Length: 504
RNA sequence: GGCGCGGUACCCAAGUGGUAAGGGAGAGGUCUGCAAAACCUUUAUGCGCCGGUUCGAUCCCGGCCCGCGCCUCCA
Image (cartoon, rainbow, N blue to C red):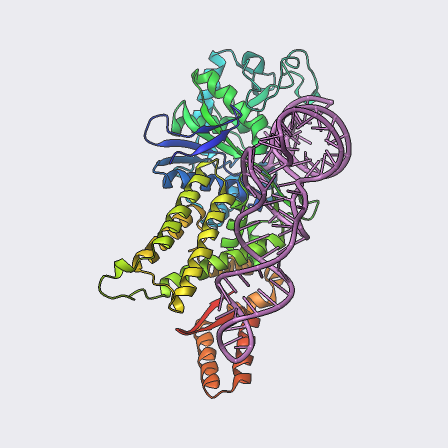
């Protein structure tokens, strides 16, 4: 299975295969660690994770590099306001970011370089560009890239800069740039600002420079794929291409992958709109990490996703159905026919299982169509549930082979979607612990706190009491216990195999 | 203004030149002491509007309306 993926650069869907024939080298723009990550950030990182997992599932090893931007204007501003060194300020948000990624079951990138630990590499890149006469220094000591020297500029974002390069003087603060579009490689220090001394003068790196320097260092002058949010296409990625290719004289990244922004309740997410949510905001409202992940990847990366709480509730229910099905498979005993049980394999279901697997793979290979891939799984779930129902009343015989094939497809699904085995309770507990420290427990719904206060032992004691009551045909008491538990977020199911419970 | 994307049932959403996946929700039913879970039936002669191409268009072309994104170091 070869993944085919839309390439922003060519505007076409193209097969994605490692240029070295072995490992796919991929660079993804990481976070600027000045605050907690919001769901928009995570939609992008989640789709990059899906891409990586799909590649790995298809047998292609991935070397995944993701930078941490730990110096920029906002960081300097906020750290100064907090009276902290920028490293102390950024480190806690960096840690929080990785906690969040883990909560969302995102595989950790192979290499996670920090911008501030690669200043020499960046300075060297500026020097190379200066040799090429494409970097120049202005009176204040800043360095800029001369885009007029790179005719390809604008190719990625499909912009035509031919008429803009000469004579445009727009920004009065940057009057000494050759062209208004020229971008900063290195910024001269302002008084009191964190600065690095270097061969090209004191100052700090421009934003775009870190990605070029670190991508080249960890992936080489030329590599397979570069990913990021759609907003980064211009100017960030355009600038990366310009400065990298002018320095190395090689194609920087062959394939460009951009994830579209999400909408929240139909509008762009923003603090001023009041529809801005961090992952932690949602966890504190009681939503499950797995459901958040599932919703954020449910709409293919190239489409806008409209994030709504109604949608999140729907996703939670859908996920519960998958888990219930998986549990049903695991709990059912298939030792039906004893000798020669394999002869009792239901061929029709086995074929349906194989077809679902193929449909799942094909959907992912087709530009990561996660919606279609998931539909293939649900089709199979229904077919298998029917078979299991029929088996329960003796109309059908299923073998361990059937069960194993079904479980294998679910496992395959979960290797990419990673939503079935998440320990949601542990993630929520960790979020609540954090909320306690951050003084945000007041926004947590009562049901969630009640559920947390209820231990497994207490739940099982109540279930035992209910069992006795029911045995004595005291259904009123039994139902009261069930209602009480439900109110505290615990769902009870009676079945022939006994009572089952789970936290909602 | 430039570049780009989208408008599919109550909600979310996939999709194909040949007559509409999937999920959630609602209603009815089977099962159950009652529930839950699961399953069945049901909810778009219809895919923003108007033309055109075609034997045939939701899917191709043109126009229009509406929504959205980027063009400002926001993923």
